[in-house]
Length: 422
Figure (cartoon, rainbow, N blue to C red):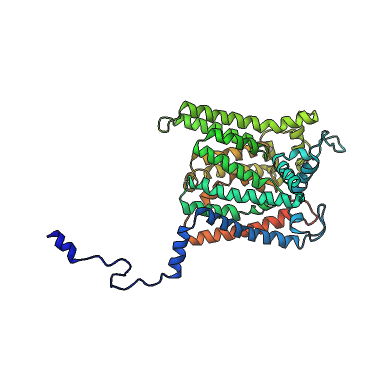
């Protein structure tokens, strides 16, 4: 009988190894593997973030220890002073004195550099914390940046988890935290605040919570220039959803919400230039101020969309070769968005990356700060994280850390010859 056959082969008693003996103590490797799997995702992200900050802090402290006297600090400044040079000084001016009502002019009568090039959300927040705590700008600015970076790391995992498996999403966070420009997340710059807000906005976009994204986009557009790029991404998103509505329904309510978010983003993208016009009386105040930073390369010229990169091709390379290299770079990047690892990110993140890069091509002149301005294409770290080889992953982390050192040496550390500002 079947029942008799079952009783002929009894299961071993619970708590034994089948031979009547208690199981041996698990190996340390097995214990670590089990503990790792039981650890909440946010704890893993926090550990990754803290370890990455140890590395970046060590690099910055190393360069602070050999920093000569410069326009912002004495020789060998403390960490917080060293972390507040370059544009950090402009954010200090905004936080303490606000924006000028009269645009400064050069000796030739052109609009010069001023605080109007720096959007208000980050320095306003820093100023608020300073008023509440009585602490210095340098300290508060760095702490605010670090906290936004930590929040960004946590949200980046959540964003990547929408499109990638858990382990790949976690390694994406590793790459985000050790990226070549990740030291920027712990200095007096607005990039960590921008990154956090952008990650949240993209998270809501992927979740199709369009209305929830609006207040985030509002603050984002006043933190770093990104409103127009997000508006373009929303336009492409709406078009894509419309043309694929038979396989992916696009209800009228979602259409209205998505279109409203796109329109709102476009409006927020021009709010700051309008504020600058209202406060200074010059309708081109913001654009003229931004153009002042490229005058050292190409002189004072009006903004013509996409001309900056053509000028850059001639400035950095010259001749027909400059245009050829630029064209090849654009085509190569466009093709990169269609390779399998990048396609795993889904259509919306790729539309954002394409929109933001197109925005940079339209308004920017390539120089050393180009690398910093490319931080918002961080979803691509998810694609770079896809290969599962441990050799590959260790190698890419080491390359990123070496590139951190290179960027701090070339762009942040000031050696008296201002040619490569961050």
